[in-house]
Length: 474
Image 1 (cartoon, rainbow, N blue to C red):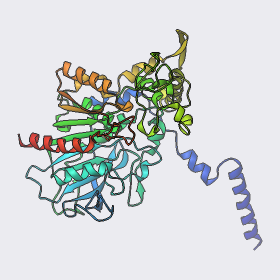
Image 2: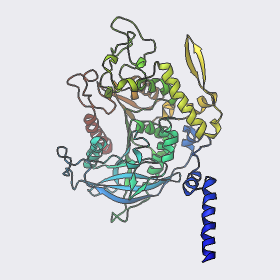
Image 3: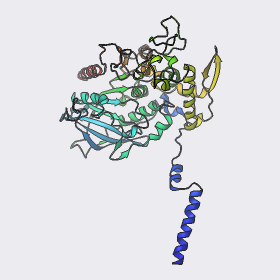
Image 4: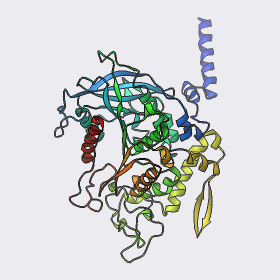
């Protein structure tokens, strides 16, 4: 008994010592979670993506639903029962286990395999990513409508959720730490998402579907079409640059459509995108009223004007009508908003990119305003990432579908990119949707969308189904 008491006392003292040195089980777990770092952004440069290998083994893990939309009126009864089934699959991308949604028509596959849509979804964010449904959810019809329409038209809709997105059978996808390190603050996650998508596509001929299909799934690579929205448009443009000019023919889509693609290079986006969501100076006229242009009602011009339309959920762009909007758009100037975004980006780069740990952000006073002078290493590495900078590789047919009032995907950028692609012997077509927002919808607010404005999204889906059908029959 005495020995037993001594042993208990000794164990108690040991635990106290363990805790006093910060070695509690909780702290030990935290120490084991090493800081996510990459050696250099050169690892995700277009050059690196074009020279590397891709591969994965895809395993279908669960059956999900036979209707992505349900009943549009009640939200409960299945509308498309028997037309298709949707499954969740797992795959590894660069060692990171993640998920993809495979929505498969119930029709017998053609001998060459199912024609398919590779769908790259837009920004979800770190908080919502683990519970993301990957484009098939009757309670959130936006992407579900697209999945439903193409599946009913006979296409398999294959959508990688990217690292950190979705949970299957109670297990969350790996890689959420990448979003913490490189998503909106640093703004380079689309490059990693493009890698995930390419690894996924490369595994389509090696799918373990035995638990759900009598015969192995087969997909027709000659009828492979790419769709990407917003951040997924950015990832899609990077994917196209990574496989363009015949360097990876087996991974190259026949036709691509990118809509509301947020693909402006990050160093430009710091000013041209971030400021429109943080300072009224970016979209107001020179007399501090909103006119949709830099010119006020009194003729005064705002020299720091960026884009005339903030996101439509601002409700009113007129500061005199604001309440909660004052907090969201609290930065005094475009310069201060840009500097704030740049400082956040630099903090993330110093922390997570080893060869950028010593970078410095400098300011220079030009004409009375502090302008950002980027570190030379940052400028060099950022110039090598993202498809926007590499029109010479964007040789496959691509359509850019763009609303004309979206600050995330400004019409001017799309016009510029399409012109550069065509000048480089590519094949780019620009489709503009008047008075639509980032979701290709008419806004409920008339300052953004006048009465009678048509929703562009259903038009986009209908036209693409017809276009892909025509291309597949040629």
